[in-house]
Amino acid sequence: MIELLQFEFMRNALWAALLCSGLCGILGTMVVVKRYVILAGGVAHAAYGGVGIALYLGISPQLGAVGFSLALSLLMAWVMLKREARADSIIGVLWAAGMAAGVIFADLTPGYGADLMSYLFGSILAVARVDLFMMAGLLAATLVLGFVWRRQIAAFSFDEDFARTRGVPVTLLHFGVVVLLSMAVVLIIRIVGLILVIALLTIPPSVAEKFSRSLWSMMGISCVLSALFSLAGLALAVYFNLTAGAVIIAVASAVYLVSLAVPGRR
Amino acid sequence: MHTESALSFTNVAFSYGGDPVLRDVSFSVPEGEFLVIMGPNGGGKTTLLKLALGLLSPDSGTVLIHGKAPGEDRSAAGYVPQDAGRNRDFPITALEAVLHGRLGRSKGFFYSAEDTTAAREALERMGVESLASRPMGELSQGQRQRVLIARALASEPKVLLLDEPLASIDPETRDMLLKELAALRARMTVIMVSHDISAIPGRATAVACVNRSVFYHDSGEILPGMFEKAWGTCPVELVAHGIPHRVLAAHSHDHTEGCAHD
Image (cartoon, rainbow over all chains, first blue to last red):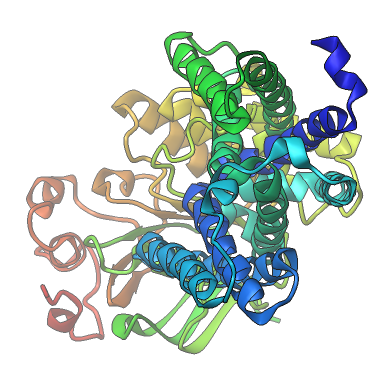
């Protein structure tokens, strides 16, 4: 197995898995504690709309995905902020509409056979260096912003109303987290696919929460778990010649089920 | 120079999605009061508190807390929100939760030694200093409530605003908590939303009945015999305006309007 590392595509896959884990561990913790799961799912699906529109217009699919996801995620974040009673339904509609737009525009694009499968499961073994650099950049930005605002983020996550009375810029933090999250989702989708990004955002923090005493330890444990799931899944996938994304999810889900039976120890 | 009021509402109206929640609200709470805000569900009690904190803005009228707009002076108000057990799994220790009360006071990049001292003192005042390093999720309802009050105290407020702090707490803890809140009056104005009529006698110095309008009584005297009758029908009518009338002076408002059951 070690000899596989002499191939660049394998080394890139490992780096991609580790960078994904960092982003998912930190932002996934926010997704779980702030109950942004539906928003993350919405952004991930809506990203496909951006890909379809970009193909139709003949611009870079990555650019289309970033632009479209960012616009829709800001709209979703605004709906959530207004405490709209039906916020989850509205996000559900945007989620479906975004995906449908992607399929329709891909259909309308001459000569393009819509490759929905690679969008669903990604292609971690075909990661380009530029993707790695973009993920590393986003991770660095997340770490710096998260460190600078850590006290405000903790207060905002624990109790939004109280944080507001203490002068914490709750609205700014809400939109800030959503923007970082949607950027991360778009970048990670290319590598591990739509389904795995939602799994990696939610499963490791859900396991970590039981064993954490602070938001920061929850983030740290999530990053480590995410990396372990990814590396173990990748190794098993290569060994048994299975689809990497699906094996990573299988490993994560199995650990999640086991963790439900283990009593929390804080 | 007259003493400034801790909290004042002047001709305040607020509606939510087109439905009027509060209208024509005017009252003024002098410093050092222990005000209990009562009224039926949906009558606007929590809305009143959120307007005082600046979490909501009135459609019209003015809200002032120690002479300033809510939110302008971060040291004016300390908020104890209703704790319905939401976010119970959130990973945070009691001490860290209380430190959040220091935000807006300490401008630095880290919590200072002074912040930590203030947080520990606040925990101590609420009798829960031994729980400082325990996760919030492991605490009982009463312990959590004390920590949340300590969090508000850590911001060293002039006015403490509490939303249903006695809800879902056992009677023994409830009585102790009430006593401690009453003791805080020496240092700050205490304003508490409560369903619990028995919180008033001997503790409250003023009572406000909220049902779309606000009826403010600058006296906490209510006969104990009235409480049994009070629930089940409009508490505003029975507690504050019931017979005998020597308990409280009659309103200048038309109170049938204030107690409209709709």
